[in-house]
Image 1 (tube, rainbow, N blue to C red):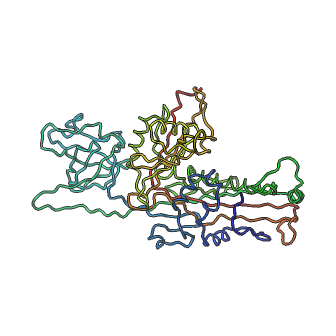
Image 2 (image 1 turned 180 degrees about the vertical axis):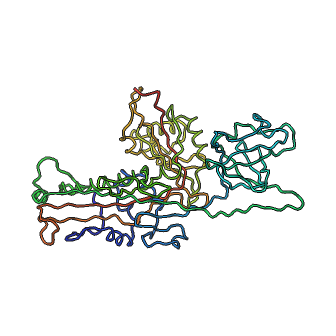
Image 3 (image 1 turned 180 degrees about the horizontal axis):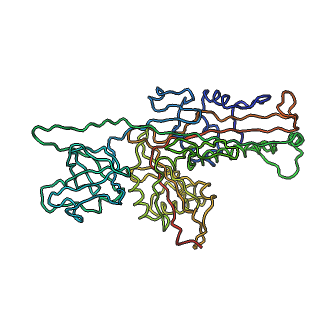
Length: 494
């Protein structure tokens, strides 16, 4: 296998500067996933899948302003892109505990707030709800009315206090305290004003907000001496010899080294886009990571760490029908349609979990006679599929080697904790219609040879040896809620 990576120029008598890379970046940097070819399919399944579905920016560069892509992206610097987050009109608010740990206060009826129409106070995380608005609680039945003109009053700890009454004609109704716990959802659903001489109304404008995506940068290389290159060219290398692709007559260690560099580039890119953590403080915008020379190391959040991070689902007994039913029910509301009308998620599993999942799906009867491959005594029953469609959601299930190979804690049943890790990523649009996940770049992948004396001609070093360098920048904008499957291990360690 040999991948074409564009021009391979000898860089001599010139350093690669930030300005050079930015200038190169205006060409068309959005082809990174594609040029990694077959390597990306094996080493970078997320990178490959997003590329296949076209979830990457097109034409984004360091000159991009607010007019690009209908005002969705603005380039702040060569490593910082700001993106518009459209407001979801059907937003949810949440109960939040005040500084005293209380989510509501009802002096008249501490255990039965709202009984006999008495007002009480609740604490929420925003002031979107206004005076005389109706709040629907998470049980889907209880409705509260805001008993003032101004809505919520901001209190210490960033919470807002609302004076409310329960809506209903019965004297014995009250609010169950269990549905007003910290973090529980509620929603603005309507408003009720007096019939005559009402004075005030609430104003709301869904302007949305902006998020910050920071791009990560890394580089790889391989090098050789002049003597090694001559031996490699003359095919006189002893020891390990490498066949590249199907070219049985072309034995070359340097070509193998080149493929290895690309493999690690794909692996590193996939890791950063999926699980990388930002080094930029969200509030101060300052970079927190520096090297020993006090140079700043910039990195952006990967898909699993954008926003509030993943929703975590424990899987104590592996893949079972009951667990799958519960999981699919829970994630369904977070999965939206993509531009083709499909609701889908990428499911990345380590080897053990991948095998167990496929065994479960086979046992559920999801395959019929069409899974028989071959004729006569050569028939094979094939129960391995690229994906499954359950309850209108397509699961694209991939065996992700990185999860299998990562460090894990030994468990008392002979397995390891990482054998059960799983990452689930919805691929559809946001509720406002924007792509939920997009790869972003401002610079193309750049590579070049630093020529030594062994190359002859224009050189940049007197050393009898040269090196090939690869520089990659990547980033991702992710607004979809993602999920992490894991096995609780605290009581199962050896």
